[in-house]
Image: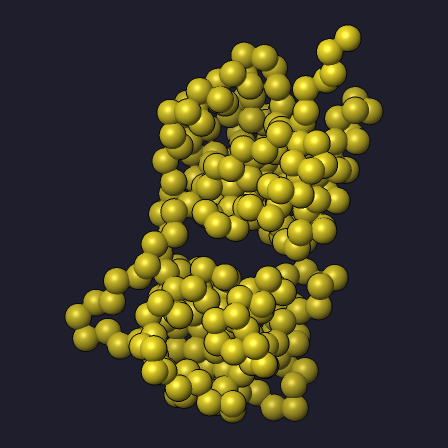
Length: 269
């Protein structure tokens, strides 16, 4: 008797952010396909645009690991980051990236591991400090939520938003499209990991263009913030109302646990 086919995980985080999870899932018996939803590119500075110096701010907020890498690539090798300038981010993995790029002892504010990794949780951490910073630099992609900047400005803090990287929808390769077509032909329901609003838009746009939305709505999905659940259901169309969508934190252990939960549910069904 042949053994059952392994469950399939499709990881859509940007290139370079899927490998650790892919290894963990493969070790756990999953078949893994890496299919980044977005392409991350350096931000090309416009005429007269200056890279803000860490020395000009009391706090620097990185919205993601891409913001860390993008800012590091923009700075000159001899930049000055004084000890008085703190850093902040919404996730532990990004905090580690800050320390790897800007100093192992760098003070980095971030939500606790068991808290939701978002701007609201980060704001609670920042506002709990003895005093608010006077000058804040927020590093992000070419667009994003303004909520955190609005909280600072409402309290008289000077905020500068700088584009550290750019994101574009990825285009799926012919090989990936052929693989998805095989899954559909064999009635294989896969589990997708999507971690951003832009990722949802990119993935569902490509599924819709190929006529695969109905199949996708019968797959399972993992997202990393409650705010992503309803937009994903809406983008999946009529079938999205009954789609299995699980919520996980962005850390490796939580993601692996969530994939395991989905696999148990599939076996029970």
